[in-house]
Image (cartoon, rainbow, N blue to C red; front, top):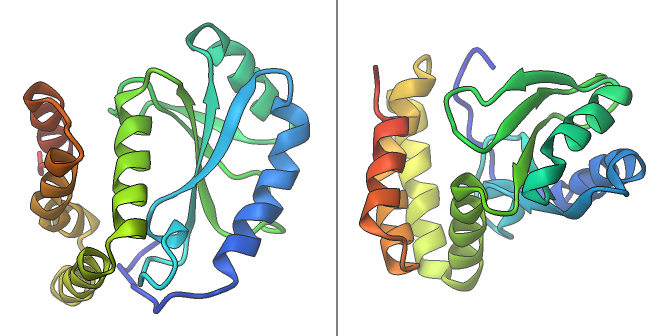
Length: 181
């Protein structure tokens, strides 16, 4: 994505997630505990970058098997991209909706982060509206700077995670990972 673009909520996003989940499910059926729709497109009514975020959850001992299963259907393994216990993948085809796919062991702090933020925003319409407004402002300010956009969201997301009971060391790690180099 060359520009940071935030779209109003698209009611097709859940169906887009279901389509990708259906494509992935057969390959990971033996190892997946869950396939989660995460990120802003998973929150009804929330403006978002028009890219579906998906976490395939596996037992810690099944990460290697999960990577192999996803590679077998054309996903390109990209490593953890600096986020421990979260394996990123390049989508295999332009025939699928635009998405980011991650494989996370069930013990992954990144997975816990994704689920906590999603669930908080789903249950708190005021926070979701505030987050949407923040993302719109940041997208205008950092149109060509994804790192600036991400860093600009960090304080809000850290407040959400603090309310969700994340320990201080986990919050410190998240803040460090989302800061500019």
